[in-house]
Image (cartoon, rainbow, N blue to C red; front, side, top):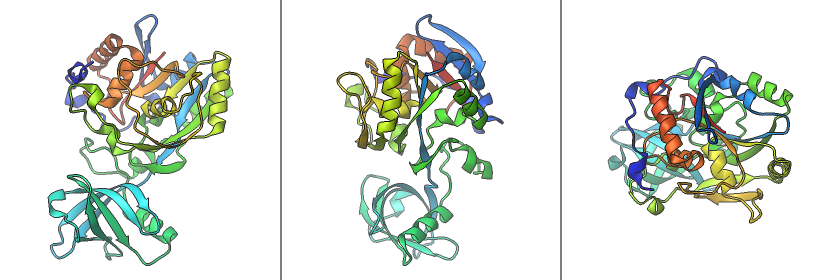
Length: 349
C-alpha cells in the first residue's frame, strides 16, 4: 500500500482540544472485523465485550514534564526546549529539540528558571531541530532531576491551541502510569477510569503491563509514498516475564487478548517467538507496522482516531483491514467523533 491510501479530509472542528468530563464517558466506536459492522457506545461499555480470563495489554509508561522554556545568553531570546531522552546521567547529557532552532548553535548557553538556577550548554547538532545539551548543575543527580520536574511542563500535543491548564498534567496521563520516560501519553489508555478498571477486575479481566516510552518519532508524518522506505525512530521497550506469562497463558486457553493502544501493539509485536508467544524484552524497538501484517498475539485492539498519513493509522489499517478502517473513519467524521489525544475511542474486535 502507498502513503496516498491513508489520506482523508479531517474537519478541524473534530480535533479534541479538551478531554471528556469523565475519562470513561468518551464515545466508543465498536468495529467488528468478522461481521464488518459498526456500533456506537460509550467507552465504559467496553466491559460488555470481554469475559473472565480475557487479557488487556496496557502500556504503563509515564509522561514526564518534557517541555521547558529557557533564555539564550546575551540576547535573552525565549527558546522552547523539548527533552527527548537522557544520553548520560553522570554528565547530564540530553537529546532535545529546540524551537526556534536557527538561533541555537554549538557553544550557546541557555538559562532556565526565574533565577537562572539551571544552565545548559549546546554541545552538538543532531538534526535540523535536534541538539545535545549538557546541563550545568552543581547538586546531586536526584536534585537535578527534581529541578527538571520543577521547571518542565506536561507536553500536551502541539495541535491543542490553548494554554496548558492544571487539569492537563493529570488528564494527559493514564491512571496506571508508573514508569517515567515518555514524551507523549499512550492515549488509548486515557479513557480508563479507576472505577472502570475495578469493574473489569471484578469481571475477571487480567492486565499485562508492558513499558514502551513513547517518543515524538511516533507522530512524525510519513513523507515517502513507498511505506517500506519509512524509518521509525527507536523507542525504549521493556516486557517482563510476568506480562509474558499472563499473555501466553490466556493465548493457550484461547481467551481474548486486547491491546490497549498502538504502543502496546508495537511493543508485543516487537518480541514474538517463532511459536507466536510473547518473549521478555529489554532494549529498543523501531518496529513499523503497516499493511499487510500478520499479527501474532492480540485479537482485539483499543485505539483513538488518528491523523491522516500517520504510522498509527497504518497500524489500524493493518489490524482492521483497509476497507473496514476507511468505512469506520468515514462514519467517525459523519458522526462527529473527536480525534487525536483527547478524542474518542475505537474498539476493534
